[in-house]
Length: 343
Image (tube, rainbow, N blue to C red; front, side):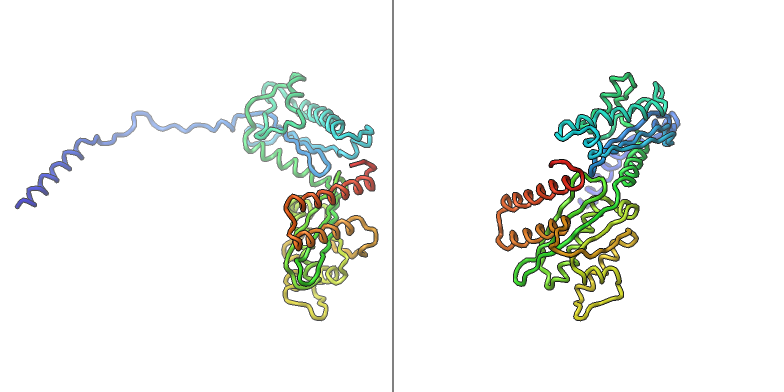
């Protein structure tokens, strides 16, 4: 009986509590659809980027999500330095900023800048060029707001197209340093027509044969190129892979050919190289090793250094200093040979 009384009192308490909660009512005003602000925004978006010896820029005029006009261009740091006979890095940087500011200002004016189409600040600031400050000094209206995402995407795409079109053919030299009982070293040296300095890389592995090591160097180098340039640049401009391993080059040029005694891992490496870079316009070339070829020499030095440093378990600082010396020498020799500039 006591439990029934307790349940009854509890039920009445719950009922009183629920009854105290106000019932929801319909809103007095109907919901209204708010028009997106970006649909009415107009302006000009700008992006600039220095990469691989090129200073690229793009200017896009937009209204809402629609692009009304696009102008792109680029400067070669090497050509700029040669034309103005500049050697110091700060002088080259100043000349680049001046040329870039002038070119962007002309493009902005040609696209019809005005109070209805101000220049919008970028989402990220690249203070190395001073383009927006230069436009403001010319009396061109510069908005403090960033451009809509669609305009930023379009100007970024235009900038990427400009860079890809002028990077030029990419050349990759690879080599491996193999010694039984030790880690295997891999090195690669990357250059293109308009690069002001080469790109270098190295790593180590525990592979069992010299052919495996050579194929792995090629695979790692191509992955490096994809990350640096992108697949579109590889497809448009083409990549030449240079190796002093005649067997590796022949296997990659003719996937149906197999040397005697080929291991399963070697066959897998060949297949993975073809699968990962299908359609990327890659050509494989054999070069004679240790014959004065700069790319082959530097790739070999990087591979040997990587193997020896790993075997000796050298401290990170010492290993970094040795690799930096190789990089500086390679850069100086490349610039002297290709551009007549000191490092």
